[in-house]
Image (cartoon, rainbow, N blue to C red):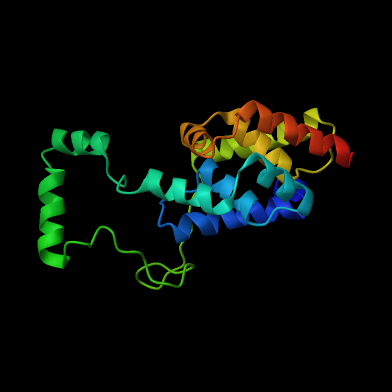
Amino acid sequence: MFEKFAKEARVAVIVAQEEAKDLGHPAVGPEHLVLGVLQRPEPRLRAMLDDVGMRHADVRACVAQQHRGDALGVDDAEALKAIGIDLDAVRESLAANFGADVLDRQPPSDRSRGWFGKRVYVPFTKDAKKSIELSLREALAHKDSVIAAEHLLLGVLRADNAACRAVIATTRVDPDELRRRLHVLLDEAA
């Protein structure tokens, strides 16, 4: 399906992976796809996104905040407790042996390599895959032969992911207004 992506949409998906790596996130979610689109949109899309108040720096800060400290959350702690592992004790032991900030440290600066020099592939979450699939449906519904960055954003909006809802809420952008304006851009381009 990637061959159906326009260059800017293809770049957005690749940048989404880089964003997830840079932020130290274990997977690419729909919120990273939004970051990918926002990082290098074509001029008409950039103007529209600026007009509605969606800026890369603001969205990136929100995504970073959402994922801060949630590598192992409450649900994970409960699951581990069920098999006899106390997550708080593990965290205390790590802090005692490796320093208080061990869980906050970023990986090495070479984003394409992990801790031991091996290439790192950041997988896509189920929701990110769904958003990409829905971007294809958006392109087909609009009778477009390629998937543009606008379709990618429409796919993310259509997937209605909780993380993306939170990102959009923080930017104070009305999802229906964003959807409408994306359709206007696509109509103008046709």
